Image 1 (cartoon, protein in one colour):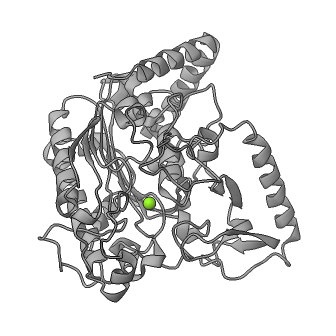
Image 2: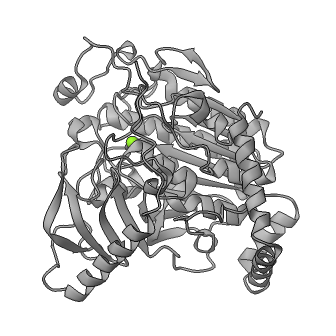
Amino acid sequence: MRPFITTKRKANFYFHTILSFGHGIVFLLFLLFFCLSCTAPKIATTSNALSNNQSPNFVVIFTDDLGYGDLSCFGNPTIKTPHLDRMATEGQKWTQFYVADPVCTPSRAGLMTGRYPIRNGMSSAKRVVLFPDSAGGLPAEEVTIAEVLKQKNYATAAVGKWHLGHLPEYLPIAQGFDSYYGIPYSNDMDFVKGSPNYRKEGKKDPNFLANISAYNVPLMQDATIIERPADQNTITRRYTEKAVEFIKSNKNQPFFLYLAHSLPHIPLFAHPDFIGSSKRGIYGDVIQEIDWSVGQVLQTLRDLQLDKNTIVVFSSDNGPWLSFHTHGGSAGPLRAGKGTTFEGGQRVPTIFWGGEIKPGIIDEMGSTLDLINTFAALSGTSIPNDRKMDSYDLSPILLGQTSKSPRVEFHYWTRAKLHAVRSGKWKLHILQREPINYGKAVKLERPELYDLETDISEKYDKFDTEPAKVAELKAMIAAHKADVADAMPDNLAARIEK
Ligand code: MG
C-alpha cells in the first residue's frame, strides 16, 4: 500500500541519487564487499544468505523510558525478565549502547534515520517532543529504516508508539511502513482535566493505577482512529498479538517489524494477568508483561524456524523518568535519567539476538543511530549517500568477525544543544541539566571530564589531571558543531493554529 505520494517521491529521489553518483562508486562498493566475503567466512554466510535470496528479517522491540537497571540481565533484583535474560544469553548484550537523545521524539528520529536529531529537524530548543497540538513531524525527505529496506521489497509494519508526527503526512504509512497499529504519541497526552494527579498519587502508592479515561489517547490503524481512549490495560497484549500476526503472515518473505511499546512510560497499565506479578509494584508488573511479549515474539520466530534468519534488537528510547519515583525505572549504576545527558539518560539496556549473531557481552560503544547502517549491510541495501549520516555498520561485531565496534565516539545532544562528547572511555560535559526531571540546562563554568571505564557513575571529575584529553574533546566538540551547521531547521516546534 502506498497511500501517500511522499513515499514514492522519496524513493524516486533516492534511487536517482544513487545513479547520479556514478557507477564507479557502486562498482567499488561491490568489489569491497566481494573481497571481504572472500577473506571472512562469517561474511560469506551473510553473502550466501543473500545469494539464496534469503535476506534477513529485522525486528526492533523498542520500549519507552525503560532504564539501564530494569532487567534481571542488567542487574535488577526485583523484576524478573526470563525471556530477555535468555535472549541476552543466546545473543549479544550491549552494555554501552546509546540513544540519540534522552527524550522520546528526537530519540526515535535518530533510530529511524541514523542521523542525530539536530540534523533531521527533530530537535528543538523550543519544545521537547511532539504533542497533540503539533503541526510537524519527521520531514518527508528523511529516509527511514523501512524505506531503506523497501529497496528489497521488505514487508514493513509499525506497531505501538510512533511519536514522529500524528498528522497523516507524518504517520508510519507515509514513512515506508505498509501498516501501522498503535498510539501516535505518548500515552500520558490528551490528559482529561479533573482526573487524579498521577505524580501525586503515584508517589503515595507504588501500585497506583490510573483510569484509562484520564488519558484520551487515540489508538490508530494506519491513518484511522479506531478506539479512543485507547484501552491501555490491554495495549501491550494487543501490540504483541499484532506483532505475532504480522510475522506469521510474512514468514515467506523478508520483513521488518518495528514494535515500539508505549510502556513503561507513565501512566502505567498492565493486563490483569500481570497485575501484582512482581515485587516492584506496577512498574515491575509492566516490565514483566513486556518480557512476556518478547518471549511470544521470539517463540513465534523459533516455531516458524525463522530465528536463524531474523535479527531481533531490544532497546529503550531513553532512560528512566525518575521524577515519578517508584512509577519510574532505575538507571542502575548510571547517573541521572531521562531528559539528561548523563549516562542514565542516554545509555540503554540493549540486546541483539538471532541470525548468525555470535553470543557474548559487548562492552563496546553502539547506538540506535547504527541500526539503519547495520540493517542495510546485512540485507544488501544501501543507506542514503546524499546527506550526512551518523550511523555505523555494527554487523562485523555482531557476526563475531571483530571484537571492536566501529563506533568510538558519541555526541550527546538534547533540545538542539550539544551537552557532552565521548571519545573512547572519556566523556566531557559542557552543559548539564539537573538530574531530576527537565530543569534548565546550565552552562558549566568549566567542563567536567569523566572516565567511564573506572567511573561509570560520572562521580569523579578528572578535568584538572587530564588537560590534553580536555583539549582533544573540546576540539571534537568544535568540529562536530561546525559539521551540523547545515542542519535542517526546527521542524518540531510548530503548533497547529487554533
Ligand atoms: Mg521515552
